Image (spheres, rainbow, N blue to C red):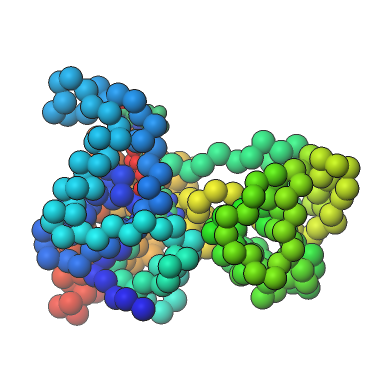
Length: 292
Ligand SMILES: Cc1cc2nc3c(=O)[nH]c(=O)nc-3n(C[C@H](O)[C@H](O)[C@H](O)COP(=O)(O)OP(=O)(O)OC[C@H]3O[C@@H](n4cnc5c(N)ncnc54)[C@H](O)[C@@H]3O)c2cc1C
């Protein structure tokens, strides 16, 4: 297991901007990124400072990563599936676990929920987005994880400790992660069923699976997914932070689209800078034994 001064989850504008400050202050900094920034989808950026002819989102993204790497940043292409703060700050990826003195979440905006009949209505009534938070309510009972990648696999592993059975539902996708011995059903889903509480799911071929809990873990772990499992407070707009971009957990910071507000590059870069400097000060004070 490797120890770093600072781990930044995300290498978009917020994450890279923070890294420029932590690296120049001499902190050993690791950026972890799935490589899927919202910026990649932006064909032409015309409202960001310094580019009179505009610039493609992809080029801006690569320039930022290049700048951080020239200052000594390591960028690990991977997905963070969980963060924990029980015993120091631990960042969990399919490649292994990393420990750090300070952590920045810069994972961009929350992804959309699947458009499955019944899903939204049963949220909080058997449908959950967090195995660590809600798995306990289903101890000894049958649950399913909706997803097909590493995040779904991490949630399924967590649930396997408490639930009676765990089935993986990929909703038509081919599994892209290792689910071990767990049963994987690839048949597309037609409906999430239940009146007051979840009772199960119905598949497109008419078959049914009775369930006590359904854990949605589609795509990559979003900031809200990571935050929820780590006990970080989430507000109406996104992760809650103070003026220094620090969350309710000392040493864990958040910046950019994942904290909500104006979802723009300039705001993400500005917040990244504030978070980067705050991390530098946090670790300096910690080293001097001062309370943060
Ligand atoms: C189509 C489109 C057009 C846009 N046009 C403009 C524009 O013209 N001007 C403008 O100012 N803004 C524009 N935006 C918005 C802009 O892209 C965002 O505001 C900005 O990218 C947010 O930066 P960020 O660093 O917070 O997040 P992002 O740029 O989204 O970066 C998120 C980072 O987190 C990583 N990540 C996420 N989850 C995980 C995980 N579990 N593990 C590891 N890594 C993870 C991703 O790989 C990525 O590196 C546009 C957005 C879109 C989608």
